[in-house]
Image 1 (tube, each protein chain N blue to C red):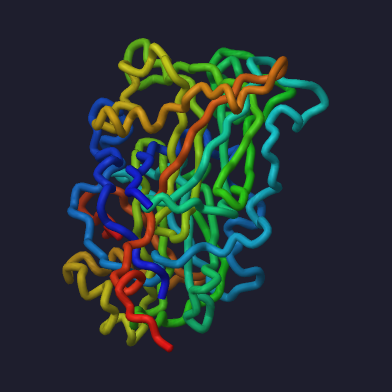
Image 2 (cartoon, rainbow over the protein chains, first blue to last red):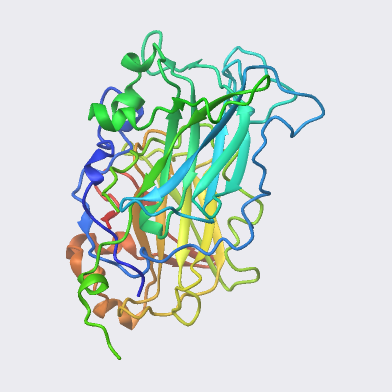
Length: 238
Length: 166
């Protein structure tokens, strides 16, 4: 049996019914969710092996013949669980717009230039201390049609698994000081100010590389196991 | 270790299609005999062409120590399809099933559901199905068709799929 996951602390997540983000209107369930306590299948971890999920590539600036345009950055941080335990060997998937705010996906019709030297997709595994590190360019903000003059603040999408299907997380990392924050319903769907702040990376001098790239630190916390009384209270056996 | 507040979720957005789907993602087990397909619908009954469906399941013997994983985008018509093996009953007494995650633009936090299969005697004793009101249980049971099983996912509406808080 897999470790049972903590059920507390999940109220930081957005309510799926968030009218300011108009696409939620027809895409959130209206019936109550059925509560499952410690279902075995959802507590299992997907076996991702050495990577059927695409090649590992943590340098998004070196995937083409030339260097992409934009501000080169290092994005690094630790993945850990809600008990503070680092999560090693975790698959981290990222994707983002280019420096002009355009995604390399055909459906993105934003009138901003594509960059032939930038795709904007990266994957890596966390190291023994749970750390990941990507080299990329800072994505640009881009317009969307949610409301008049709607612009998404610059962000990088992150996908993580944790130790169970039930600890899966897809989220977005933002950049400090972005003036678009107060106008973005996606970000504001996280209604607790402190929780919102945890989606914002910090400029980090340690991650900055002299004469080459500015650095940002962003730690990610996933659902962790319940602390079992047996772990601490079992009498020692001979 | 001190408690750490969780990182909040955000929508997968509209433009994950060049990043998350991967070759072989919809083939959970190569050459598997089980084919499950379906369409994701919104509350207006329209197909959702920008959803991402992920599956985790036991192997044929019901073992979960190496959870079988698959991923399929619903572009361009809202449809997804997986090829896999029929999962065995799991240790907790659950009938054969697939655990499913639905991500989509407009969905700020993914949803958990499950695919069960018709004509499984075990379904009557399944502890998860037992928690689901009688009149909604059918939303979790795939429909047998000539080319496999159909499992449609309705995010909202009269016949809304049962979703779980795990």
